[in-house]
Image (cartoon, rainbow, N blue to C red):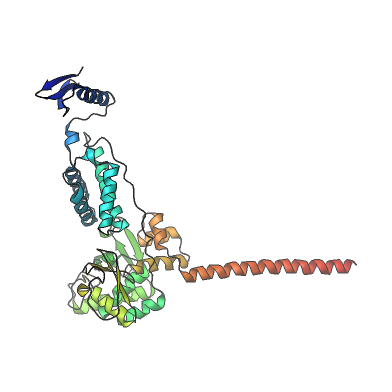
Length: 397
């Protein structure tokens, strides 16, 4: 049985769990408040929900560090992204006890981030990190948190719908430097992620069998996959092999710059190629979300947002990743089974794959024409049936 006693002007309580005594201040000068706390503690012990006073002293900082360690231990490739999310979360929750992180407090955090012009998608990534940190803490032995707060997610804007038609692919290919044209071809035909392409080494390419073997360590979703080479893609890699053997035989990378080194970034060359095509470039400000358009030749690092004068601008349309959507859409158009297309593109879930399988105006127009043709055929059958019926009746007369 527990008890209450007074120490100075404050009432304390004493209770037991598994024979171990616990002493806790009620923080009140009223005995009734102490007895309420004692009753609550004894009830939690009976229900098996009391895990010690240490749980109530744990702050968000400890949960955040555990989450980062989980990513490091499992060598997750999105560690840099989770670190950024934790940075924003700590700016608000650092030093806060986990028992005080309620749904209401989380909603106030969301309002703060929205006031900072953070996009809903960015905020959702941060809320996902917060939820994951609580989940890991609840699975600890002993648990570091007793209750996981409800964390409402925000509605995100529609997924990007960018893609390259074949004439656009040929157009930008003409204006890219020669050493980047093979990178473009690889992305257009395979839908590989840019990092997968730039990190591709000759040890992963079998020109005899005509295939690329991506190990689990070389893919974003940690699943190995095989991509077969044919047509323009095979010829492109064959030329790369010949060029590499002649110019830089020691380079392990399939795609390399004129100095024989791995290609790191080619954003400015990409922009120049689009400008030469006559396209207007659009950049989105990471600070305020304003879209800035430029039509003259400027390096992106010299751009500033026309609204807030911020310098953190990101390309908004016609980015390299649009080639991934294009390749997936082309595979579906070619009647390749979606299961096979997902294996080639490296998508693990159907929901994400569907976001990449873009339906454009041409697809919609084609669908409308097919429906019209269906109606026309049905009408012709009905008219033909009427003609036959009338002729039969006249013959009877």
